[in-house]
Length: 285
Ligand code: MN
Ligand code: MN
Image (cartoon, rainbow, N blue to C red; front, top):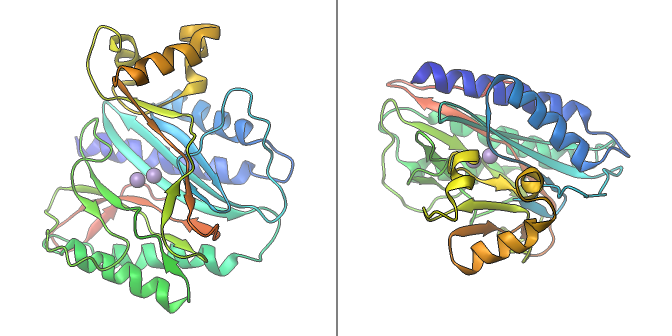
């Protein structure tokens, strides 16, 4: 099982790097998303649609099939990639700035907070303490953590498997256990420090088994999927079909999350295997 986690993590790291290198002024979000997803599909499976979240968008944006958005100079771009091998998931993210260095400190801060958090992860550590390390690291660079986005434990076919790892000190005394797999993902902002629902999105997930959702479950292993992936399944009826399933409460829609004061947001994420005296970074890039 850990070999599968390791392989998924390795491929996620590689795909993330390829994606980051392909971001340039004038390139479309869709091109980058498809490049990353094509790479993953050659070696593993996609655990969730590539998230490409720009500037004050923190998470959960993936391009639609006809998305015309292109990267512009000065954009702060978070790419978040998920792969799986037989259900064992690798989840990793980084931030790049398009042809500019204005937000280098913000981007570096997320990396430092992640690094500091990783350095304290081991069996028995309280997740509230991990949050404290992240919060202190971010305060030191004079930014704010986003408090309503969290890291998470990962289990087979479960991206968010029950334990949430805070990006600030929340007093939680839950302890990590040896052999657990967790994703840690500090989000850093120039804004007020929480995200709000932007009311629209292109990412969905089945939440209830039914004859109406069995095809989707089969195709996406019960994991999140993008609206643009459904063109082959449903052709022109994609929108109608999704609205019907939403109304029946058989699927959930992940809306885009935006910083509440439109602050700029950076993110860094690794998937880790908790060990007795430390941890192994599964998504090293
Ligand atoms: Mn992620
Ligand atoms: Mn994650």
